[in-house]
Image 1: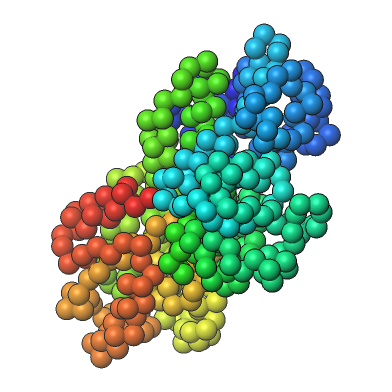
Image 2: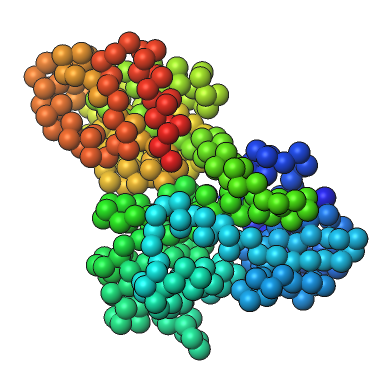
Amino acid sequence: MEYGLIGEKLGHSYSKQIHSSFADYEYVLKEIPKDELDAFMTAHEFKAINVTIPYKEKVIPYLDYIDKNAEEIGAVNTIVNHNGTLKGYNTDFYGMIALIKKNGIELSGKKVLILGTGGTSKTSCCVAKSLGAAQILVVSRTPKDGVITYEEAYSDHSDADIIINTTPVGMFPKEEAAPVDLDKFPKLSGVVDAIFNPLRSNLVLAAEQKGIPACGGLYMLSAQAVYAFGHFTGSEPNESFIEKAYRDVMFGVRNIVLIGMPSAGKSTIGKALARKTGKEFVDSDNVITERIGCTISEFFATHGEKAFRDLETEVIKELSHTGNKIIATGGGAILRPENVQALKRSGIIIMIDRSIDNLTPTADRPLLQNREMLEKLFADRYEIYKNNADVIIDGNRPIFDVTELAYKSALEVM
């Protein structure tokens, strides 16, 4: 390959999409087992590459030159082959600064906990120092000089202001994990997670639920890629590329999730959105019906609501595991917090807010067979829909207008 990314496991990476948004070269994702790194770096048959977990430190001995910034950090994520001379740089530094500034998280004078000890941790330490953090503590499961344990973080540093996660805990495909319990840190004013897949990790979602400013790592990935592109091409980084790359990739990989009352028009609007965006349309109720081989009403009658909700949770998690879909959910999908969390990790949740007078009870809906049941369901669920939505749009307008509103909301909310 000429240009690309090397790492041990790259199934989670969006780097190819990001580089494709502003570069005209082919960017290759190359997974390299640990025992093959030496042969790859010794041959160095590439023009320029990015480096990710777990090789940001391991590639350093193969380099002929290391940029001062990368040398101070002790990690390299960008290597350029200049006629056989390998030069290493660290563009993660600038990516992390861009991410923190974009989200308005202030580190000056703050106590910062950095989770993890790898290359991104070292980068984050330098970033926190450059942004004026008053105290920087590195946290790891394995105690060693200059590093504290999670237990020490909980017991002795519950007054931390900022948490930066650089571990892979919570990353695709094990999205349901979280590296730390935010309840232990009541003074937090910001959470930064270098993880970008899923778009919102459980750590970020937990912070958002507490009203704490929080961000995932996709903007960092986009920014560092633009700075890497500068090294690749020997040109000044064009920072206008960062926002474009971020928005293009965010829209391309993110799910658009529609919630709302039964008969609010989620499936109709979802299909229209799929045609407009090119994303795959899926209806969670249809997936369930195919799986059970009967109607939902029949399943309710035979197995009860709990069995249905358990199956619904299973389907929601499967649909949310990957991106670039329009997901129309069943009316009760958001009754379980774990469903909402799964949907939010890689999706924006849009509520179709349709008034009760425009909803229709039907015999094939087990909890919505008459007007009385409709009114009760509306009263029980309306606030739940509102509280779990990222965006609420008026569903009483013509289908075309509602579709346009949903589309614009998905473009704007980042």
